[in-house]
Image (cartoon, rainbow, N blue to C red; front, top):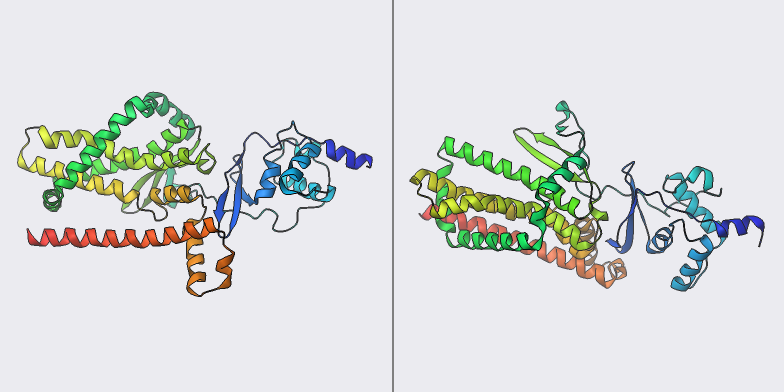
Length: 383
């Protein structure tokens, strides 16, 4: 072995501390891992074999040791040229600690070894500015979320969370049992501008808490919040909270909890109003307005769980399927199946199950939504 080859074999590469690696995700027929540089916000995809190597670059193991692990796992050894390609790819992207000084020189990685990826963890970063439809509300969103977590994070402990969820379920049972009455209340609410303005204000405040809940739960699981702000497409103005490392949280269930947090917060917000509606001595107009608020707020929370992009329900289903770009991949696969294209057979069983399940589930959800709208309209027209 030459001195240069021996030096390469003893090189102990380390990823920079702020580089994140995702779990394995379906992407079409392939399985990929996402790698993100949190300093620049850029991310890209690699295959399972590349991820196997990159995940072991901890500064402790040499390339020789990593190569031996790779050979045991995949039955082949990497030569010096391939190591040079991988290191050059990571170094030119700025992902290796001390890349300029420590990365051995070598040829650039071949095209396709690490395909660029979009930012999959939530919506794309908005163009900020008053005239661009978006503005930041706080200078340091992560620090703000940390303070919120210190104040209310105790509610995420099972001793608090379980009773609150039981109350939420009980409230939704009450709403379901009185849905006909509440539909009439909602219709009447739209004829009273003063009460309608009050209900709309409360629902908007609920959406703000919805967004902050995503951030607090992400922070609880070790996540970071990149931005908190307002976005508008007049006349609609909404608050947003961007979790910068959503897809890189420690486990699938932590990501599901983070996505689910917003809708749960919407429902928790309704609990005191439900108590007033059920037990407080109110005049008829206020009682009916609270009933309408319960129905509209519940519908708002449930709507966020519909499994279509960019809603929270879509993120939850994507995590259950272990996929990135689930909707697009499902559309591509189902078109191949409809055309009886042989390429559909190249999809692994896990991908076929996920895409067929999501496609059929989406149709079922659309049918249920349509049935609910028709039933609500029929009820309002007949009372």
